[in-house]
Length: 212
Image (cartoon, rainbow, N blue to C red; front, side, top):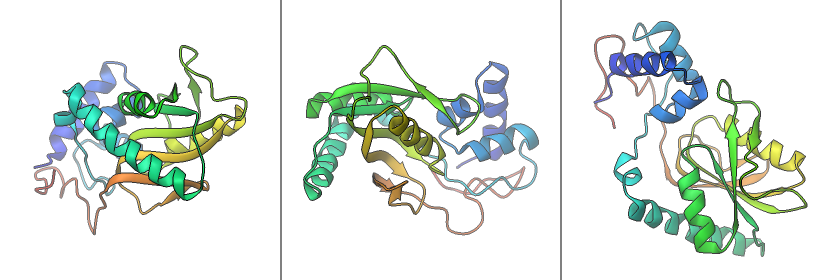
């Protein structure tokens, strides 16, 4: 059962602790729009249609993260073979895309990079200087856990291109959209989850629908 009151309370607690909207969205596995709504209006009325995704059963185990990453690696090889391409870098979008990108890079023998989105919005971000560069024509696989609107990944793709890299594939665990590509870059997800009518999060302040 997804409880809107509980989600709103959690969002406000995280906000008071100093987390940005983007960081709260990552923590609760919701879109930025939904988090903004929950912070501003709480559980009153109907939040934007969204699907709450949780993968803690995977996240608590390095073995399970590795197993999921093996699936992502298999999909990567399939996609690259279609276009007779190769890749140089596995890039994880912080924070939830990082463990999967780390394992993917190990499995496929790629360099590993980290992209940090802006904490307050879906626009702009920065590459961590502690990890590999995407410059000089590097072919980059972008990895995140959940895709909602695609805005964060669009920013990553734009920044990769601006840095001189070439994004060749986007991988996510769950695709909450109908998109199959982002800005011309193929998008593959292990799972596609979409809201069909109404709002998955719940019917207002006093109830939630039995999903997730």
